[in-house]
Image (cartoon, rainbow, N blue to C red; front, side):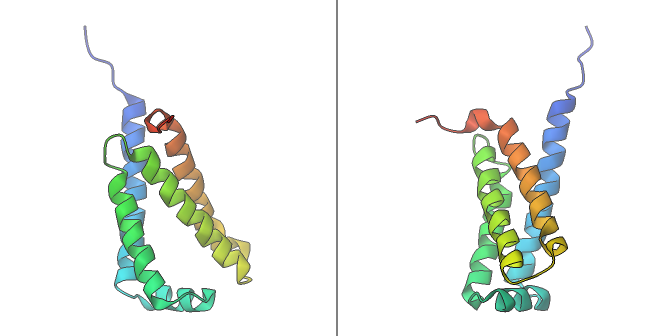
Amino acid sequence: MPATFDWRRLGDRALRLLLSTVFIVAGGMKLAAVEFEVSNFERFGYANWFMYAVGIAQLLGAASLWVRRYVAYGALFLAAMMAAGAVSHLRTGDPAVMAAPALVLLALLCGLAFTRRGELSTA
């Protein structure tokens, strides 16, 4: 009997690859103190050290998307960061389109967490 192709598993891996790539790049830009990131954090009123902390958190979140039984937790962690990022943009008076990437990532991360909800502790 021929094995059937598991499209759901492929979709899960593709989404995790996309999200982890985005957060590796974003975290790397913060750790490299790219001028765009520095100016955004200054405009938001955050200290310089916080940009580095967010960069490290994004890299750890990206890595957690590949750790068995922790994917849902990592997705929720990154989703919370994206919610905070969107709020930061809106709070400073940026147009809503500036918050849109964070909101799209938030939606994708919530979808990933939902599909992996069985990993979340019930205790």
